[in-house]
Image 1 (cartoon, rainbow, N blue to C red):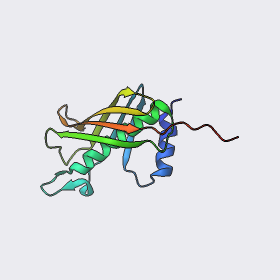
Image 2 (cartoon, helix red, strand yellow):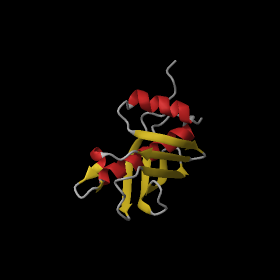
Image 3 (cartoon, helix red, strand yellow):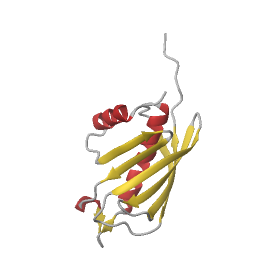
Image 4 (cartoon, one colour):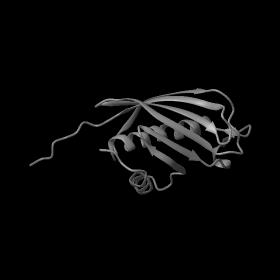
Length: 140
């Protein structure tokens, strides 16, 4: 049971009304998101902060999961590892391209490549694992 981009957009806007992420595409165990960079996303030195990069990567994995298994609000991050590769530009949006690399019953692992929009050079690489809540039989 998968969810469409429109269903995921509606869910995110309802549950996370202050979300700044733009869902570009969802499907085939993948998701692409973007985030417009403004002064709130910058750290001293004029670069995009690490927590901002980690945030979009985490959300990209969550969106890819919702696209694959449907709206499961209680899916939670169990691990997130990031490798910062180069300095992202403060003048361009951050783009996150996620692929799910293992979809199990209880755990899902995703991989995210982060870019400054317009550049082919990856700024960070992320691997994350989500725990999926067990399905419960409805009480009769």
